[in-house]
Image (cartoon, rainbow, N blue to C red; front, side, top):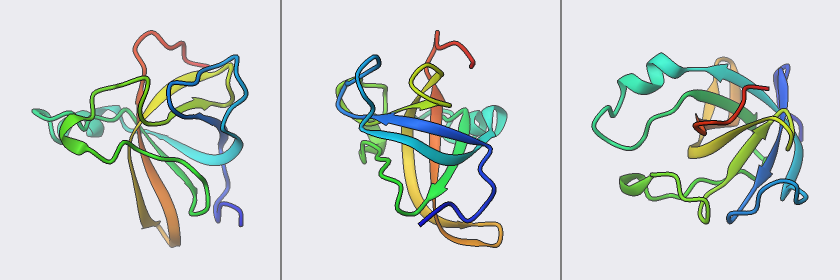
Length: 122
């Protein structure tokens, strides 16, 4: 199944502390990337669930969060890292993944991302 919207980007997904130049665990996933820095900082200001971007992917895309919202600090050995548009691009940490509808689209995954400090914007 493909993303039921016009993708504006692609991403490579890495798990368990694996990073480029290794081969991604999931490569070339079509996605819609939406900047959300201001809105992502307003919510949960005292908690760890900050995000800088939203990413919309197909429901079948294999992208995972840590599943422990109380301790969502970046841990390179746990949770997924996403590189947009590919492993040579900008690095993001997956904060949270949820199944949702998006606009008129049903059954997609909304992925909350935090750009990793020091990661160049591709």
